[in-house]
Image 1 (tube, rainbow, N blue to C red):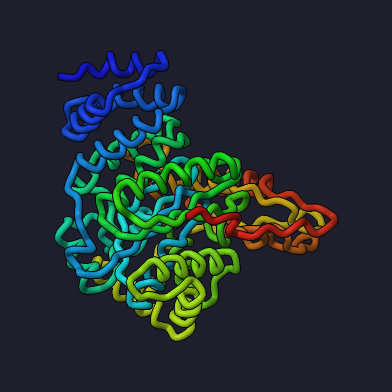
Image 2: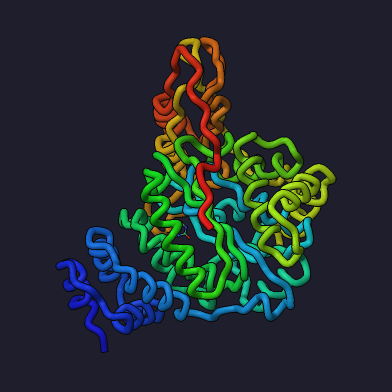
Length: 432
Ligand code: URA
């Protein structure tokens, strides 16, 4: 019988926990036998003291064992692929990557998460689609990947319940940005959901949990090691999160931008990130092609409309209405104008993410409802030329007071400079 307070105290004082102690703590939490307040204290101790490599492996393993695991490859007789990002501002890439990969004939099965801190979550974005169900049983998940070629689901009582509970608790206790907790959270979902090959997108920059390339590399290498130990092929990309990805930030707004990208009409940075991730996934699949051919096929799927058709099949299969007109719209749209002419030298991601959160696009408390309609659209991004009085961004809000506050934060996120700033690629490095 574990005593949570003793384990919390040992971690608080910088000690090491044994694999069986971590396992018991996590499994007891998943069964509802340890209260949130003790796990919140444990998470904060981990945040300050860190976990050793052995503890990180033990935590991940315990989280996987908190629910069922699925061997998708064996069940489908195909190599199944998956992708996951560590979380950023405006990151709707999975909503595009899944349909493109499925359109290329490769099964894609993903277990995703909700928003964390100032970052949005794929599940919240999907729930802005009327009728969309993220809680599928393990059986429904497998059947859908087999029949439709694509499913994205949430952690459930069956699949990694420990992550579902920890994730919600970390979101509201300032314990998200820790390498071991992020690695265990992501890789437990990837391992339990059963894909054979995984592309990880580790975000770096002011809007990401990892602020430097060096920290992002450590997180990437930790996740690659966890994946390899579980017999998975893993490629990890480090990508820029010093400004929001694409233009839209906020759930339904991001689904609209994902749809535009599937139609070949999306922002350049999102399109590049998606095509690169798809190329890696197709090269890791059982199609027997390389990265260059994977990229060519991904581009073709967007051009010939098969990626959009795959999106519509997938959304219908999960009970949703794929018609863009059905997405919710905010009652107020306020424009933000350039106070002078110049180039956008900087568009800080964090204040834009926080503005969207305060508009209601994210949660402040564990059970807060989400307002799917609200958010920010950054019309101008780093490197763009703007003239005095031109629109820099739009705020989509529920009321005047939240709109005003968001307009101030978003305007402060822009830095206008006289000379064009240096360009930076969206994909900064690839670890394999
Ligand atoms: N995504 C996850 O699934 N978990 C984290 O901790 C961070 C991003």
